[in-house]
Length: 139
Image (cartoon, rainbow, N blue to C red; front, side):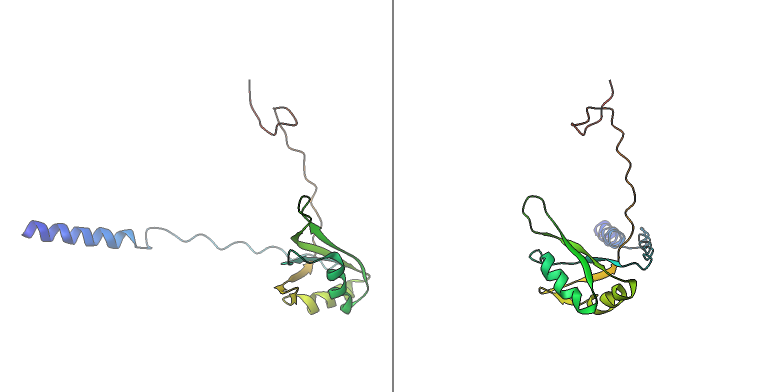
């Protein structure tokens, strides 16, 4: 009887240990992305798949002169990939566009507007295989 009680106690301790959070440290919080410098080009994310370039231009034109608006679309389906860019005539108008549209609804979805960041130049991948295969191998 004592052996059964001892095994039950050990099982409870093992069960507690299994669900204990002390054995693992939580992952570090993600590093905050540096804010982009103010410019007249805005990055807009959270767009509905059915949002069009004209709809994006119309929504942002309430806050200044939009010189260019573009919804980035999928090559195959033609639907929005969920983000786009809006370019204003001045940086001040772009700031007003962010204040007016960031966190607001467009086509039923909450969108986010921020200053666009400069695109970093990508280096071509170094491959040992054939250029079209995408696989690397050594002989």
